[in-house]
Every structure is written in C-alpha cells, then in structure tokens.
Image (cartoon, rainbow, N blue to C red; front, side, top):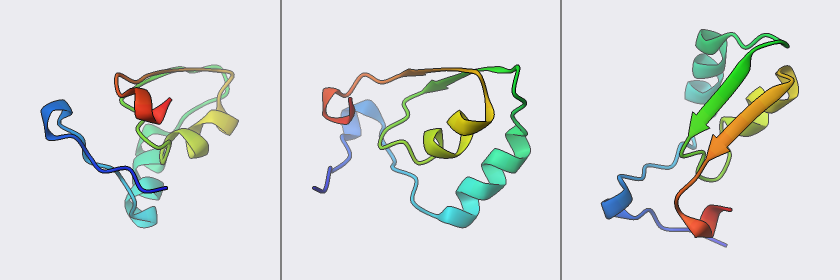
Amino acid sequence: MHIFSKKKLGQHFLHDQNIIAKIVRFINPKADDNIIEIGPGLGALTVHILPLVKHMLTIELDSRNI
C-alpha cells in the first residue's frame, strides 16, 4: 500500500537509509532516554530507535499512519 503525503500536514516521508542511519547516530539514543517522535509517518526512524530505548512516544495526526 502506498500512502501519498498530505501537503496540508507538511508531510515528507523519509526513505533514504543513509540519512536514517545518520539521524539515529546523531540522536545517539541510550536505553534510559525518553524519546518523543512527532509525526513518525510510516515509522522509518521509529523502527531503528525503538529497540534502543525503554520509552518512546510517537504522536501522529494522520490516521492513515496509525
């Protein structure tokens, strides 16, 4: 299933695995960090960060991505 971005929500879906890896390295999440991700979309970052931390909250407005 392909989900198209909604301009009114300012959506841009992250796909590039190199960029994702750089962001995760930059964030450098630790096990006891509390991470909040606003607009996780399809979970490109979430799937890489979630296994590294005990607590992660994602906030998504687009019901197509829940």
